[in-house]
Image 1: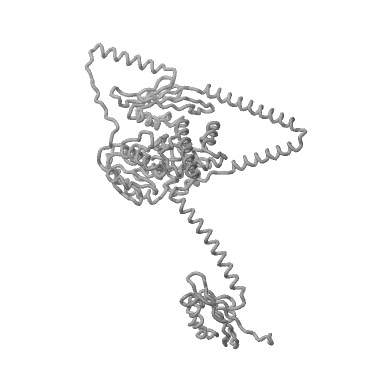
Image 2: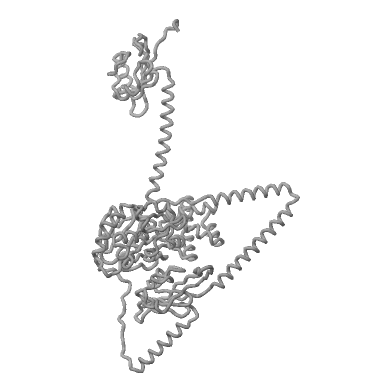
Length: 622
């Protein structure tokens, strides 16, 4: 009964902690599987010596850095270029030809990599389309949205930089065509990089990207419970066009959704969206126009001109992008600040450097438009030569009269001075804290000067803390393997240990048999030889490899084997020891001897008997 109460307390503590994470940092893990989630959180708690969930929550409230460590433990990022090559080969040779045949030559191809981690999957998709369509057509038609809930992984993905080890799965020709060496790392080619839009997105909460031709979500669904998986699949169904393709991981499949998805390859986890209603969450209202008089037209034109002048004179740099991704407004300060010109109005926003530097704005525009809410990016860093600037960026969707998104307004607020001042204040504060700590340390040393024993204890404690700190720095968190492989690894380890134990036992028994001077022969239930020790080989002149698995009574050696048949069969029948029996025999050098033979039951695997054969020596001769 006490065990059941303890389990309830643990569950309640976990749910309370998950609610705190959702309210404090906006990470909603309530849809994740409790077994995996609880195991990872408890692992992190053990690393920081937190005994209960309440203790760990206290640590999170006092240490902002601990949030990052916890999220890195929960959000396991296991990925690589063209992971599971067989599945990618099927995607390129079977899925892409069908997809391209269904898309008009002038229509954009939209792809979503959900749960992209550090970007390898999104860049693999870009390379695959470039190899199939050709680079030029890919740059014009293909748009890849890559999203993840882990901001740290997204920062790595946006750089497009990878170590040489990460590129080992790639063939040499792909590596040379799509990567340039940059010091010790390799960078993805910039023109194709601009076709990949990275952004933070929670597939359990945020609105899905729509009108997709291909949706890739590999080994992500397995971390969620059944209810959350159902909601995610509903969003995926809404996001895909009719006959759009869904590409899942090896650990996932859609077995109970045949009404909406048909199987293209269950082995490779590729599904095709069936035709049918996409379940739109809203329907656009018709726009009503009313006639205007000439005076009203003149007034509207004048007001529009004044509005444009006011926007152009706005002290904050700003620009606007319409729903098709075309730049429709750039004010004077934006042109000055970001080296833009009036000629950039009317160009695709993705062609401008400001679209991805200092921050990836295209994905934020998509998110703001879909969610119909204003987004803010604080302290985005921009380097201009030796100078560093910081901006707060506001991405605001503009809605038409019918409530539908019409454009997006982006405003940049220069917070360089404030950021530098904060940094200086932080540095001064750290210096003061360091000085205070040094003063406090000096005071403690003065207070303990005359207490030799206490001083020794404090020195040992300090040394222990330093060793513990060094040990914590050296420890790294091993990435948790996919849930489906955990039990297999445990079983493999147990089998390896048992194999080692068996090898040791076998070596021990072989050593024992080898060290016995008398002849020891083990027969199975069919009287075939299973063991023939060194004593038997020296006595009769037959090697173990010559007699193993051979019928004992058909062997040709100096012992009259037929005379021991009865005692062997009696021992097999009743399981009792028989003998010893003295028999005349001829040893390996042809000399006549007398040999005693004993037969004992063998209790090992599948039964059998053990024959002990020993030459009887004359005491006087010896």
